Image (tube, rainbow, N blue to C red):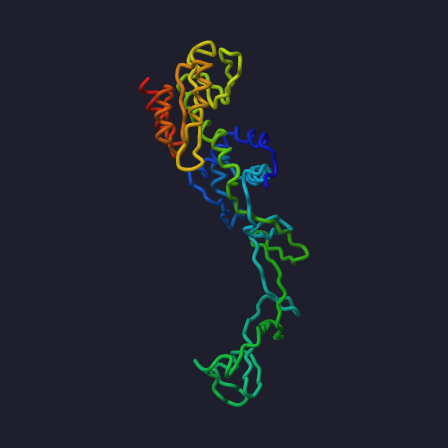
Length: 327
């Protein structure tokens, strides 16, 4: 279920960082974004840090995309924070309930089924064998001769024994100790792309951003999205409009279409031609992800629409550069 409307998501798609980040999902570079644990700083998302250029805004960035319904998430871990310094570099000590020392020895309780004697395993151990200290009979078969009756711990400081230790936490950074009552706990998530918005994302700016920048670097004035009034007086929207000599000069238009199955079919070609007919651009490009169907290719050739087929943004840029260079 989407948490925000399409208009809100479309605004997010215009953000350069959002475009670059979501492009990694669409290209297959990321299938699931999982956090990486760093002993110094705790959990982090290096792929997002690389996009944003730092660590400070990563969680806010991911939360924004999740609340907009662009990303889905699952609970990956729960991280313990030190209440004193905020560090995630925290260890857990299992302590003696009597003297609070974590210098305890953990062992197993064993019961000799035949005579009913019960003691810790080390008292049964005779080399490689298990021998009952009471009746001296060797125990060979688990569940037949003997059974494990649980865990038994012994404190190496006060000498007392117990079955359940008391957990306490230790901050490796500031050396403070604290209990569950004082602990700060935070959810950590792994993220995936919401399949319900994949087509919406591709049509909305993931491939447009690098194309726009490339055209601007080559001297074009670029609008994305662009609204151009045609001869009929109607306004037509294109993913990109590029002007070489200002908006009064000739215009090149470009639309992006993504296949819902194996190839982009005829409809995006027909839609682009209808807009071209009214606007009369100098050139018209259709970027088909990952490819155009054979019938659609024939139609594009008939309508004088230049086709760019690509699986990802890198292939789009390579093909576009070649076509621009020819001109």
